[in-house]
Structures are given as C-alpha cells and as structure tokens.
Image (cartoon, rainbow, N blue to C red; front, side, top):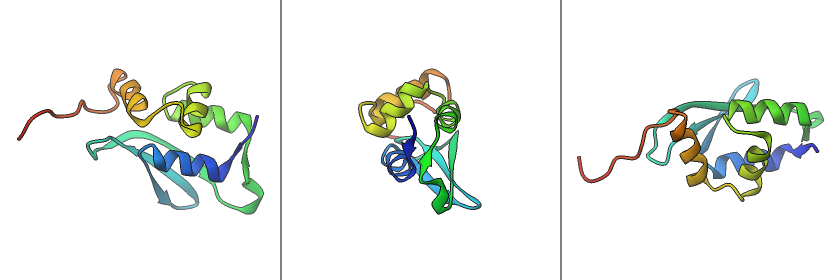
Length: 102
C-alpha cells in the first residue's frame, strides 16, 4: 500500500532525521546525542510524487536499515525514536550514548 509522501517526510523528521534539500529531499539520521549517522533516505520532489509506491517504500526501509513493516511503524509512530535508535545501535550504525560528565 503506497504511503503519503508528506506523512513520510513528517514522520522521518519527528524521529531524528534532518532534511537536506537538493534534486530530492534527502533525510539523514542524527542520533539522540546529535551525531550524524551513515543512515539516510530520500524522497522525490514534485506534485506527481504525492504517494510513495510500495517498491520505493521497500528501498527507503533498506536505506533506513529496517524492514518494510518497521519503516511503516516508524512513520506511523508505533516504533519510537528510542527503539529505532536501539536497532541502529545493535547494527553499529550509531554510537552509544555517553553517560556521566566529560
């Protein structure tokens, strides 16, 4: 089932992705501690791209290093930012949070 592009973009930014403009809208994940990660995805601009087709949703999920269902949960909110970051931490894609004072 296709996903609404605006809802996807809003969901990504609410879960720690930052938007970078270009030919496409690129979204890069920043950890809760503010560090840029290698995890990214993108959406297309233009009025003809109001929905993101299933094949592209699958690609976006792979780029975000999670399953399609987890990606849909990330956008719809059952998958919290903390739980998503824990998945990235398990894969070594983000650094663990620092405890205590420096």
